[in-house]
Image 1 (cartoon, rainbow, N blue to C red):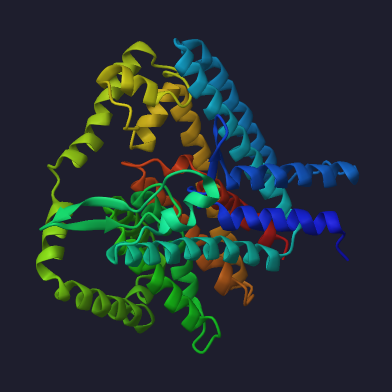
Image 2: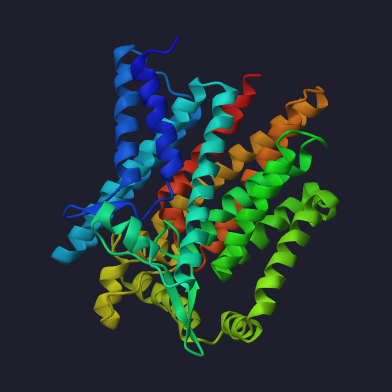
Length: 439
């Protein structure tokens, strides 16, 4: 029977996973403190306290490797400290270092925690993670509907809670009508779209492999359709690029199922719904889509322009870059603009940590892919042994692999791989061989 501290740690863990994409729920206390910051810190502290109380310092090898990566990253960041030149740069570095510590602390503790829990708890964690995304999406669609009616949902619900200002993204206007893009509880519609790449790609193969008549078949079809509608509502090109890249990966093992009735029927339902909405305001949506498909606009040019900074920075600080979390300082110094970040994870990586930091992160990604390869082989071994769980583990492993590829592709022009949700995703990916390998 679980003790109260153990139950409280489990609650903190699941609460963190559930709210990990709720970027707008934060408070300014000199620094920005997210709800996920608070919950993740409490979980790590609570988990460490329970382990100390039991005099139990065991860590699975995967968590030890993750700890090794954390130490290596810390060494790179602290060495890059000597490239800082201003007080503003030092302030940004300190903020980035705190975020790094909380992110990797949550990753390592989460892997160790899942390694001790049952397979059922793993599925619960995945379900809670997806449920948080679904709540975020639901808020986004309600936010969009409210904006169309002239109401600011963020001002009504979030501002009194956080004391800060937030609102739906306004892309522009067509014939006097504003074009709204839901950002839900994230900071940007593109962030929401790229985050949704994960549940869409992870759940799709699991859904396709469910037996006909399974109690989750219909709910998953509805959920996937709902998440895809939200994805489309964001008008995010990066989100769709990530989704397409992930489905290319899924096409290898599931090419026949991707053109089966199980997937085509929900897609047709979404297409009919979207077509109905579009035909009611055909000129409006035609103008919006034409603008989003253009590649020569100011927003698109700015996304590509940040890549031009890489040679300049590497010419002066090739090995360790400008310092952790310092792209914004460099960008402001060069252009005078304070409202534009790197808008590319890979640009931020190269500019802030140089060749050494980029190579280290590439090794971390290789580690993720390798563990997912172990998970896929585990699924094949289960299938060869005629273990019925193979119909769940193998699709899960492929879905996580596709989601990682999709997230990497989408981050060419955004940097969600720095966010909390990516570490929760990595946690789930790395834990699969541990949790299901015991069987």
